[in-house]
Amino acid sequence: MTLRTRFAPSPTGFLHIGGARTALFCHLHTRRNQGTFILRVEDTDTERSTQAAVDVIVEGLNWLGLTPDEGPYFQSHHTARYLEVVQQMLAAGHAYPCVCSRERLDALREGQRATGDKPRYDGRCRDLNLSVGDQPHVIRFKTPRAGETLWEDQIQGPIRISNGELDDLILVRSDGSPTYNLAVAVDDHDMGITLVIRGEDHISNTPRQIHLFRAMGWEVPEYAHMPLLHGSDGAKLSKRHGAVSVLQFREEGFLPSALNNYLARLGWSHGEQEIFTREELEQRFDVRQLGRSASIFDRAKLLWINGHHIRAATPEQLLPELAFQLARLGIDPPPPPEQLAAILPEFQSRAATLVEMAQKCRFLFIDSVLPYEEKAARKHLTQAARAPLAALAAHLETLPEWTTTAIDTAFQHTLTTFGLSMGQLAQPLRVVLTGSGASPGILETLWMLGREKSLARLKEGDDFLASQNG
Ligand code: GLU
Image 1 (cartoon, protein in one colour):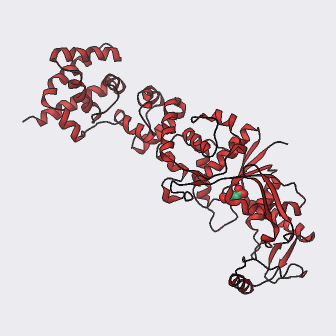
Image 2 (cartoon, helix red, strand yellow):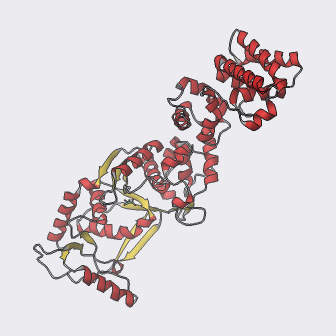
Image 3 (cartoon, helix red, strand yellow):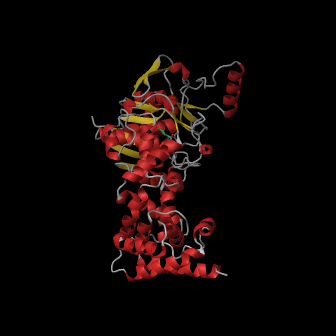
């Protein structure tokens, strides 16, 4: 039997990292087992579901490289099928119409609360064989009253829930719309899902869905309920813990490979290894190896993993993200990919995020770095630097080629002529070229900037010093 899994988000908000982790685990487990990964949008809640939410979920999955093999399918397109299944259940005596009024149900619940009982439907209409005509009614499932429902969860181990805990689930609301558990069970069957991987907050739905499968005589899929993701304070991860939308992690300069690596390691391990490429995860990850305790989201560790992935990344992996960050800094359209690829090695080893990387290389792509950072200019850009900088500029202009070796000749020559230490020339030069006191090696900085821009900035620096003089 070939494995078929699905990721089934409700489009009521962004794709948060808990959801992304579920999608990642489905995807990785499916890859390793040569199965099919399906995306199903659970948009039966028409009031809260929006197309905008569908779009950001798909965008988030694409960014993470978790594109489905099939889908997206939309539950809102399957209403007729859900209702057809309910007709079959009615005909077979597995479901019944219920005409109990809201007032009666409210009173029932009140009474149960007062006596400390769990609020539940008492089954008054269950065996009445009602013929409802056009009377307002819902359709309920005849939940078996005795026995228990048992499944061997691939993560949690055996789970048993007594059927007496469950009441008669509503399958169709009084407005004729199908309910959530019905839609999930029918789709899981119709889509041939063999393994349901989802958060453990769904464990309470599972016996209900298993009952629906059995009533229809369908084969019950296997289940794997994943432990949830918590914030550092131990509470379920939510907005107040900071970035939780996947696309916000993109904005904050994380690589998708790093986020995947980090999320995969939450609850799963492979020996002592911390850094995994996507290929390694696809070969090694198995949902059955997941631990059972909740995982804590740890931003410092994510940053550390991100640094590793940035250093190991190929230009193909980095360029789209760097261009995205540069655009956010106003460099739009982005510089040509060849130009970006040439400068990458200078910045790759120094940045923990792509935001940092973009900030550090921004000076290369803007027209002017004025005004200079005040502190750096005050410290390094003194009148004593003016003559050496001018001499260096004149020398650079005449170099036969623009290589770091050639640039070094001019640089050393200037040092000797003026009797300067390396820093006495490099620091003022750095301010003039980059606007700040920090950059990659000074020769590399000149080289990356190119002759034309370097000379223009030296001229700007000279004008600046002239204006300061006197
Ligand atoms: N739509 C549900 C959710 O977003 C998932 C249901 C399932 O995986 O069965 O929580």
